[in-house]
Image (cartoon, rainbow, N blue to C red; front, top):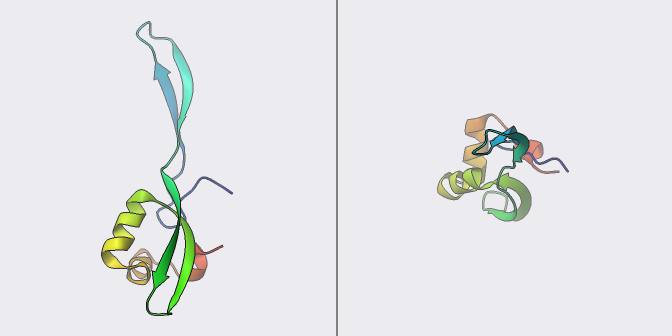
Length: 80
C-alpha cells in the first residue's frame, strides 16, 4: 500500500538533513496518514479510507461526498 492520500494526493517528500557542520544526509518526510471509518449518511453505510489528517479535517467540516465532488472525485476513486 503506497503512502499516499487518495483524496489530496499527499505523498512522501525528500530532502537533506543538514547538521551544524553542514553534513548532508538524505531524509524522508512522510504524510500523516490515518485509516478511518467514515459514515456516509446519503448511502447509510460506513467506508474505510486511508487519508491525511488535513483531508480528514475537511471531510469532518464539509462531509465526504460534497468534498469528493468539489475535488472532482467519486467514492470509487477513494475506496480500495
